[in-house]
Length: 173
Image (cartoon, rainbow, N blue to C red; front, top):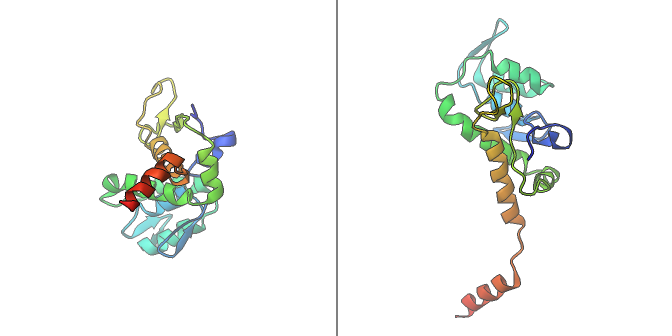
């Protein structure tokens, strides 16, 4: 089981560098995109008002995804965030793994269960391993990653000779 996104599995983290482009803005990680999508209205951050578009541009330029995450915890999120956050995360993670190298790395995890293990009580995206939470969580990020891995397997799957013969027979009828 992969239960920590560190070491050779660091690439599974939303903080891992990748290219996510959305509406002309290039985000350097999934975390950057995810936080940028939290807003649709003016934001007051550190005494400065930002339009949603300016906020997204600013987020894309922050170098450290950890800083971006902290910023995302201090903003007013869009009203429909709880309904949309899974959709945004799924889209961004799919975009991340369009990179052939990252896709190959994900495929190399074979059929290992992927769990976003954490100690910071994120029981929505992962499973919290602290004593208080005792390995509870919904693991949505891990499930998204495993789903994308399954999609990549299907895309890379070559048909068997039997499948090719069946297909040829169907065409000849």
